[in-house]
Image (cartoon, rainbow, N blue to C red; front, side):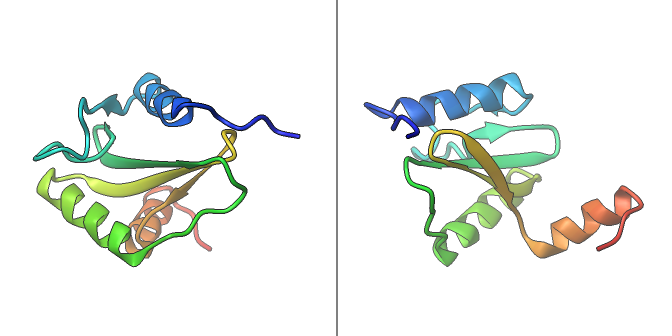
Length: 107
């Protein structure tokens, strides 16, 4: 059985990992005009974590993520960490297509 995170430690670890990977942390993210949980050169990262093996993706979260990224002149991406281990990226399809094209790849 996978240990479950305690006392909100999972989101702190997730944001610290983002910072180490190049998306500098945003102190007090989500408060006032502080947008995203991590800012990279290209992307504004919204970090979500759950102790479960599933995550409910809401359209309102996607709209907010895209709006905030546009204000920061960055591409939006959501990093979802499931059960304190596996991470996946969620981004608008158009941005995914641009990444494929830039990498010379196709579906």
